[in-house]
Amino acid sequence: MDVNKADNLKISGDISIKLGNTLDNNPLGDIKYTQKVIKQMEKGDYHNFPTNVDDYGDYGTVGSLIGGDGVVRTKVTIEGTYDGKNGVFEYILEPDGSTCNHRLFKPEKKKGGVQ
Image 1 (cartoon, rainbow, N blue to C red):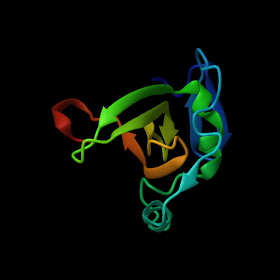
Image 2 (image 1 turned 30 degrees about the vertical axis):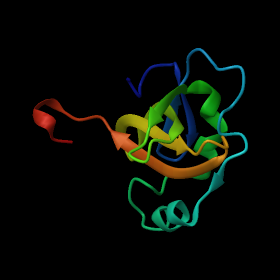
Image 3 (image 1 turned 120 degrees about the vertical axis):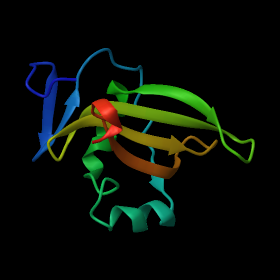
Image 4 (image 1 turned 90 degrees about the vertical axis):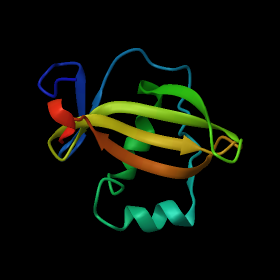
């Protein structure tokens, strides 16, 4: 990811999304946040990126993961930048496809494992 390339779309302030192939639909189009996620978004850390990132879920990738409870959930990741750092916006959706119980920007790790 290179924030200076023309294939990045600046969506607000210090946030950009890497453009590329798009999905047929936005998997975050009907997103509903749990109270846990809403409280985390109030902290002002990497949980607190603007909600308009959700509008660009169709530029992300979708996969499945199995939680420790055995439930299969949907993981959506969108490459981009936040607060001057390259990384991914990560969402985990419950089996209903709209309830989000995890929302976090994960900066890329630099060599040596330090951000």
